[in-house]
Length: 262
Image 1 (tube, rainbow, N blue to C red):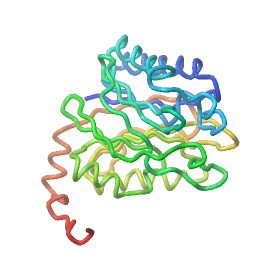
Image 2 (spheres, helix red, strand yellow; image 1 turned 90 degrees about the vertical axis):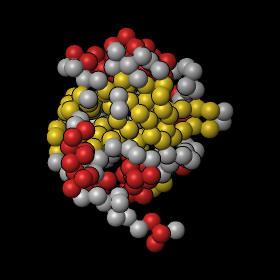
Image 3 (cartoon, helix red, strand yellow; image 1 turned 30 degrees about the vertical axis):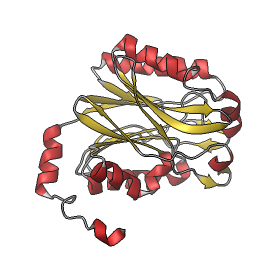
């Protein structure tokens, strides 16, 4: 399977502009032969709490129906971070759409970044479930940004739910760029899984994002990576043989001691 990662800026409060950019990057990814393209966190609204409160919509309107059209028209699967409104609650969410335009998974960010000046808990309700979805024989575990600091969610996705591709949509800031790269590589190595990370560039509400989107193999090798400050598309191919060899050589899941952590 060929995977593309779109690293993009977003226009605060301009969903139509952002959706055009998502469409254009999806078109480019398909032209390069990608089967799936992954986008960052909150692509429809930008990562601004006041803007999100104003523009978040249900999944029956707004960004998601448009993303479904893009996927179907281009015959490409899409994973994208979106705002989601349900009743009086707003969620920081990911949608996974197959190449037929069907929603095959939804994930709501479980770990909210509650550190000033970005206080997600004042805008979002937390998700309460982890999510794995299957596409073309691969099992994708969905996560968003701050989740990356909690290795237990990735272990649960890989060891308990059978994920072999761990996806991160993020809006990670420059000030902690080194943390992001170290954590992404660690998540790949410890779970013997591919890690696909799509991060924002640009600035929202005085927070500047560090880009550096990346595709990492199950041994921690970087297969492709993006710049720190430009809109960009990167790509690589997943190999089932690499997964098998890595896990056969060192069967860490079989050596786990979950009895110690109950």
